[in-house]
Image (cartoon, rainbow, N blue to C red; front, top):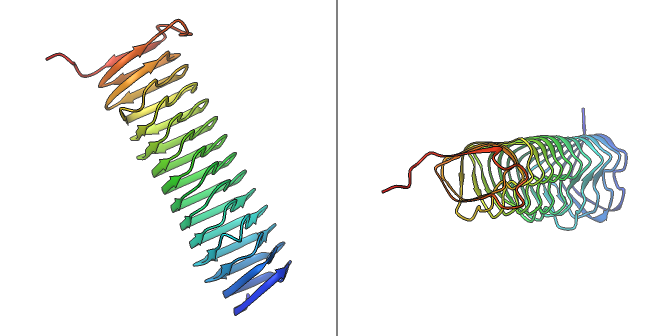
Length: 286
């Protein structure tokens, strides 16, 4: 049985340090630091956090129907098995070095530098704003239902599957490895540079110079917006595009199939001329 602590408040440093098997209900944490640090088997429901670093070095934590205000920056670091449900997070740098993170119906409204160096992550219906550099160095990530506004997302991430997402993110998926994105909208220039084994399936892509320097890029039933120009420079790829492409520049190998291509640029800097098979599926003749 967990000890229940309800309808009260804490403040200052380490008020519940190294506690185990407790359930917090309708508790407010006023300014201070490390409120529930070094604890395990904690449940927090309908709580409000206005303190820094409340959940560091914790194991088995459930957080439900809570609010993390802007004052609770860097709230959950160096922990294992964190579940957060129906929660509002206004603080930046929320998660760092977490092994086992589950988020469901969570809003992060100022999510800069969030989820760095985390692994074994699952997200369901999560909305993120201000999420610059979110998921840097993350691994083993599964996401379904995701709306992101924030640049440089998923940098150096590995083994990621994303479904039903809307990503407004400059420089997304840089230097990633084994990332698959299904049924999503990807907006932002310089998408997926230096990636390995990036797969885009039923996706809509906007932004200049996407998918350059990519190795073993795969695209299936994707659409490219008019602003997605100068695509695929120095990339090896297998791409089936169900739209026109404004321009393709110096691909390194593989094949590209598209309805039409406005311009194919193979200039003096082309490294492997003729190695990429380019096919047009719809005639432009009258």
